[in-house]
Length: 148
Length: 146
Image (cartoon, rainbow over all chains, first blue to last red; front, side):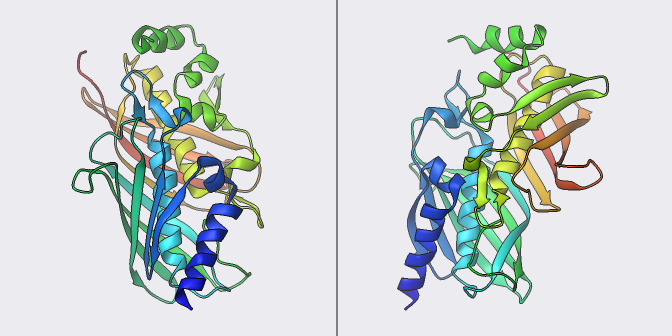
Protein backbone atom coordinates (compact mmCIF):
# COMPACT_ATOMS: atom_id res chain seq x y z
CA UNK A 1 0.00 0.00 0.00
CA UNK A 2 2.82 2.36 0.94
CA UNK A 3 4.58 1.39 -2.26
CA UNK A 4 1.53 2.45 -4.27
CA UNK A 5 1.46 5.75 -2.48
CA UNK A 6 5.18 6.34 -3.07
CA UNK A 7 4.73 5.49 -6.74
CA UNK A 8 1.93 8.08 -6.88
CA UNK A 9 4.09 10.72 -5.20
CA UNK A 10 6.98 9.96 -7.57
CA UNK A 11 4.69 10.09 -10.58
CA UNK A 12 3.20 13.39 -9.40
CA UNK A 13 6.58 15.07 -8.87
CA UNK A 14 8.18 13.84 -12.08
CA UNK A 15 5.23 14.17 -14.44
CA UNK A 16 3.21 17.05 -13.03
CA UNK A 17 5.66 19.59 -11.66
CA UNK A 18 6.83 21.69 -14.60
CA UNK A 19 10.18 22.72 -13.12
CA UNK A 20 11.06 19.20 -11.97
CA UNK A 21 10.23 17.91 -15.44
CA UNK A 22 12.12 20.69 -17.18
CA UNK A 23 15.26 20.01 -15.13
CA UNK A 24 15.00 16.29 -15.89
CA UNK A 25 15.06 15.28 -12.22
CA UNK A 26 14.88 11.54 -11.53
CA UNK A 27 13.88 9.79 -8.33
CA UNK A 28 16.29 7.07 -7.29
CA UNK A 29 14.68 6.21 -3.96
CA UNK A 30 11.52 7.00 -2.05
CA UNK A 31 10.80 5.56 1.38
CA UNK A 32 9.18 6.60 4.66
CA UNK A 33 10.47 10.14 5.30
CA UNK A 34 13.23 9.67 2.75
CA UNK A 35 13.77 10.85 -0.83
CA UNK A 36 16.77 10.61 -3.17
CA UNK A 37 16.55 12.73 -6.31
CA UNK A 38 19.17 13.27 -9.02
CA UNK A 39 19.84 15.26 -12.17
CA UNK A 40 22.28 14.39 -14.91
CA UNK A 41 24.54 17.12 -16.18
CA UNK A 42 23.23 19.55 -18.79
CA UNK A 43 25.06 22.64 -19.98
CA UNK A 44 22.33 25.07 -18.83
CA UNK A 45 23.00 24.01 -15.21
CA UNK A 46 26.45 25.57 -15.11
CA UNK A 47 27.19 28.74 -13.15
CA UNK A 48 30.88 28.94 -13.84
CA UNK A 49 31.80 27.89 -17.38
CA UNK A 50 35.48 28.58 -16.93
CA UNK A 51 35.83 26.05 -14.13
CA UNK A 52 32.91 23.88 -15.30
CA UNK A 53 30.95 24.21 -12.02
CA UNK A 54 27.24 23.70 -11.42
CA UNK A 55 25.28 26.81 -10.34
CA UNK A 56 24.05 27.04 -6.74
CA UNK A 57 20.50 27.52 -7.98
CA UNK A 58 20.49 23.98 -9.37
CA UNK A 59 21.50 22.65 -5.95
CA UNK A 60 18.72 24.70 -4.28
CA UNK A 61 16.12 23.37 -6.72
CA UNK A 62 17.20 19.76 -6.37
CA UNK A 63 17.47 19.95 -2.57
CA UNK A 64 14.11 21.74 -2.20
CA UNK A 65 12.45 19.09 -4.38
CA UNK A 66 13.99 16.17 -2.48
CA UNK A 67 13.03 17.72 0.87
CA UNK A 68 9.44 18.32 -0.28
CA UNK A 69 9.19 14.72 -1.48
CA UNK A 70 10.54 13.35 1.81
CA UNK A 71 7.80 15.27 3.65
CA UNK A 72 5.13 14.08 1.20
CA UNK A 73 5.83 10.44 2.10
CA UNK A 74 4.68 11.20 5.66
CA UNK A 75 1.57 13.28 5.14
CA UNK A 76 -2.01 12.67 4.15
CA UNK A 77 -2.93 12.95 0.49
CA UNK A 78 -5.31 15.81 1.29
CA UNK A 79 -2.49 17.91 2.76
CA UNK A 80 -0.30 20.43 0.97
CA UNK A 81 3.08 21.69 2.06
CA UNK A 82 5.08 24.88 1.55
CA UNK A 83 8.75 25.57 2.28
CA UNK A 84 9.18 28.00 5.17
CA UNK A 85 12.94 28.23 5.06
CA UNK A 86 15.89 26.47 3.53
CA UNK A 87 19.57 26.74 4.39
CA UNK A 88 22.39 25.33 2.30
CA UNK A 89 26.08 25.10 3.22
CA UNK A 90 28.27 24.66 0.15
CA UNK A 91 31.03 22.31 1.27
CA UNK A 92 32.72 21.93 -2.11
CA UNK A 93 31.91 22.89 -5.70
CA UNK A 94 29.80 20.57 -7.87
CA UNK A 95 31.51 19.74 -11.15
CA UNK A 96 29.59 20.01 -14.40
CA UNK A 97 30.39 16.59 -15.83
CA UNK A 98 28.90 14.41 -13.06
CA UNK A 99 25.28 13.83 -12.02
CA UNK A 100 24.13 15.59 -8.85
CA UNK A 101 22.25 13.71 -6.13
CA UNK A 102 20.16 15.14 -3.26
CA UNK A 103 19.20 12.90 -0.36
CA UNK A 104 16.58 14.29 2.03
CA UNK A 105 15.29 12.99 5.34
CA UNK A 106 12.27 14.36 7.18
CA UNK A 107 13.54 13.66 10.69
CA UNK A 108 10.80 15.27 12.74
CA UNK A 109 7.17 16.09 12.19
CA UNK A 110 4.63 18.00 14.26
CA UNK A 111 0.97 18.54 13.31
CA UNK A 112 2.00 21.88 11.75
CA UNK A 113 5.67 21.67 10.79
CA UNK A 114 8.02 19.21 9.09
CA UNK A 115 11.78 19.39 9.79
CA UNK A 116 14.08 18.15 7.05
CA UNK A 117 17.81 17.65 6.61
CA UNK A 118 19.44 16.95 3.28
CA UNK A 119 22.81 16.38 1.68
CA UNK A 120 23.97 16.71 -1.92
CA UNK A 121 26.80 14.76 -3.50
CA UNK A 122 28.09 13.61 -6.89
CA UNK A 123 29.95 10.31 -7.41
CA UNK A 124 30.99 9.83 -3.78
CA UNK A 125 28.56 9.99 -0.84
CA UNK A 126 31.54 10.59 1.46
CA UNK A 127 32.48 13.80 -0.35
CA UNK A 128 29.47 16.02 0.22
CA UNK A 129 28.78 18.98 -2.07
CA UNK A 130 26.23 20.52 0.28
CA UNK A 131 24.51 20.15 3.61
CA UNK A 132 21.03 21.53 4.11
CA UNK A 133 18.36 22.12 6.77
CA UNK A 134 14.82 23.17 5.99
CA UNK A 135 11.34 23.45 7.47
CA UNK A 136 7.98 23.04 5.79
CA UNK A 137 4.51 24.06 6.89
CA UNK A 138 1.65 21.59 6.52
CA UNK A 139 -1.64 22.87 5.17
CA UNK A 140 -4.79 20.84 5.65
CA UNK A 141 -6.79 22.52 2.90
CA UNK A 142 -6.79 21.70 -0.80
CA UNK A 143 -6.27 18.34 -2.45
CA UNK A 144 -3.19 16.48 -3.62
CA UNK A 145 0.20 16.66 -1.98
CA UNK A 146 2.34 19.28 -3.63
CA UNK A 147 5.69 20.89 -3.02
CA UNK A 148 6.29 24.56 -2.36
CA UNK B 1 36.47 30.40 -23.72
CA UNK B 2 38.20 32.88 -21.48
CA UNK B 3 35.69 33.87 -18.78
CA UNK B 4 38.05 36.32 -17.18
CA UNK B 5 38.05 38.89 -19.90
CA UNK B 6 34.47 38.09 -20.92
CA UNK B 7 33.06 38.66 -17.41
CA UNK B 8 34.97 41.86 -16.77
CA UNK B 9 34.31 43.14 -20.27
CA UNK B 10 30.58 42.68 -19.71
CA UNK B 11 30.77 44.33 -16.26
CA UNK B 12 32.71 47.33 -17.57
CA UNK B 13 30.49 47.72 -20.62
CA UNK B 14 27.39 47.41 -18.37
CA UNK B 15 26.31 44.75 -20.86
CA UNK B 16 23.98 42.89 -18.53
CA UNK B 17 22.52 40.71 -21.28
CA UNK B 18 25.99 39.39 -21.96
CA UNK B 19 26.75 39.05 -18.24
CA UNK B 20 23.68 36.86 -17.66
CA UNK B 21 24.57 34.76 -20.70
CA UNK B 22 27.93 33.99 -19.06
CA UNK B 23 26.09 32.36 -16.13
CA UNK B 24 24.15 29.59 -17.93
CA UNK B 25 21.69 28.76 -15.12
CA UNK B 26 20.84 32.46 -14.61
CA UNK B 27 20.24 32.56 -18.35
CA UNK B 28 18.06 29.44 -18.13
CA UNK B 29 15.96 31.19 -15.45
CA UNK B 30 15.53 34.04 -17.94
CA UNK B 31 17.04 36.70 -15.67
CA UNK B 32 17.14 40.31 -16.80
CA UNK B 33 18.96 43.24 -15.20
CA UNK B 34 18.10 46.93 -15.39
CA UNK B 35 20.03 49.86 -14.02
CA UNK B 36 17.97 52.26 -11.94
CA UNK B 37 19.02 55.37 -10.08
CA UNK B 38 18.48 53.44 -6.85
CA UNK B 39 20.63 50.51 -8.00
CA UNK B 40 20.31 47.36 -10.05
CA UNK B 41 16.93 45.74 -10.56
CA UNK B 42 16.81 41.99 -11.22
CA UNK B 43 13.85 40.48 -13.06
CA UNK B 44 12.70 36.96 -13.75
CA UNK B 45 9.80 36.95 -16.23
CA UNK B 46 7.29 34.17 -15.74
CA UNK B 47 7.32 31.05 -17.82
CA UNK B 48 5.64 27.70 -17.36
CA UNK B 49 8.86 25.72 -16.72
CA UNK B 50 9.40 27.70 -13.50
CA UNK B 51 6.25 26.36 -11.83
CA UNK B 52 6.40 24.09 -8.78
CA UNK B 53 2.65 23.71 -8.48
CA UNK B 54 0.73 23.78 -11.76
CA UNK B 55 -2.67 23.75 -10.01
CA UNK B 56 -2.43 26.82 -7.75
CA UNK B 57 -0.32 27.80 -9.78
CA UNK B 58 2.86 28.79 -7.92
CA UNK B 59 6.57 29.08 -8.71
CA UNK B 60 8.94 26.32 -7.57
CA UNK B 61 10.70 27.31 -4.34
CA UNK B 62 14.02 26.27 -5.85
CA UNK B 63 13.47 28.63 -8.80
CA UNK B 64 12.91 31.59 -6.46
CA UNK B 65 16.03 30.55 -4.51
CA UNK B 66 18.06 30.23 -7.73
CA UNK B 67 16.90 33.62 -8.99
CA UNK B 68 17.83 35.35 -5.72
CA UNK B 69 21.18 33.57 -5.42
CA UNK B 70 22.12 34.57 -8.95
CA UNK B 71 20.98 38.16 -8.36
CA UNK B 72 23.38 38.28 -5.38
CA UNK B 73 26.14 36.61 -7.39
CA UNK B 74 25.85 39.07 -10.28
CA UNK B 75 25.63 42.08 -7.93
CA UNK B 76 28.89 40.97 -6.24
CA UNK B 77 30.46 40.34 -9.64
CA UNK B 78 29.58 43.90 -10.70
CA UNK B 79 30.32 45.73 -7.44
CA UNK B 80 33.61 43.95 -6.82
CA UNK B 81 34.64 43.83 -10.50
CA UNK B 82 35.41 40.16 -10.06
CA UNK B 83 37.63 38.27 -12.46
CA UNK B 84 35.80 35.06 -11.73
CA UNK B 85 32.45 33.89 -10.45
CA UNK B 86 32.31 34.40 -6.65
CA UNK B 87 32.01 31.16 -4.65
CA UNK B 88 28.79 30.83 -2.66
CA UNK B 89 29.67 29.70 0.88
CA UNK B 90 26.24 29.43 2.42
CA UNK B 91 22.72 30.38 1.51
CA UNK B 92 19.61 30.86 3.59
CA UNK B 93 16.13 31.69 2.30
CA UNK B 94 12.89 32.51 4.11
CA UNK B 95 9.71 32.14 2.08
CA UNK B 96 7.15 34.76 3.06
CA UNK B 97 4.43 34.30 0.43
CA UNK B 98 3.79 31.89 -2.43
CA UNK B 99 5.33 32.99 -5.72
CA UNK B 100 2.47 33.40 -8.17
CA UNK B 101 2.64 32.71 -11.90
CA UNK B 102 4.05 36.11 -12.77
CA UNK B 103 7.33 38.04 -12.95
CA UNK B 104 9.61 38.28 -9.89
CA UNK B 105 11.78 41.26 -9.01
CA UNK B 106 14.76 41.37 -6.69
CA UNK B 107 17.09 43.88 -5.12
CA UNK B 108 20.43 43.04 -3.54
CA UNK B 109 22.04 44.77 -0.59
CA UNK B 110 25.71 44.11 0.02
CA UNK B 111 25.82 44.20 3.81
CA UNK B 112 29.55 43.77 4.23
CA UNK B 113 32.38 43.70 1.72
CA UNK B 114 35.53 42.23 3.23
CA UNK B 115 38.71 41.30 1.44
CA UNK B 116 37.67 37.67 1.16
CA UNK B 117 34.06 37.48 2.31
CA UNK B 118 30.99 39.35 1.09
CA UNK B 119 27.66 39.16 2.91
CA UNK B 120 24.63 39.88 0.72
CA UNK B 121 20.92 40.18 1.44
CA UNK B 122 18.28 39.83 -1.26
CA UNK B 123 14.62 40.85 -1.23
CA UNK B 124 12.23 39.37 -3.79
CA UNK B 125 8.72 40.54 -4.63
CA UNK B 126 6.10 40.42 -7.37
CA UNK B 127 3.40 43.12 -7.33
CA UNK B 128 4.67 45.32 -4.56
CA UNK B 129 7.90 45.78 -2.70
CA UNK B 130 5.76 45.96 0.44
CA UNK B 131 4.75 42.34 -0.04
CA UNK B 132 8.01 40.40 -0.23
CA UNK B 133 7.72 36.77 -1.30
CA UNK B 134 11.18 35.78 -0.03
CA UNK B 135 14.31 37.03 1.71
CA UNK B 136 17.81 35.64 1.31
CA UNK B 137 21.08 36.11 3.11
CA UNK B 138 24.26 34.53 1.82
CA UNK B 139 28.05 34.69 1.96
CA UNK B 140 30.44 34.64 -0.99
CA UNK B 141 34.13 33.88 -0.92
CA UNK B 142 36.24 36.03 -3.24
CA UNK B 143 39.51 35.05 -4.84
CA UNK B 144 42.23 37.36 -3.56
CA UNK B 145 44.25 36.87 -6.70
CA UNK B 146 44.21 34.60 -9.68
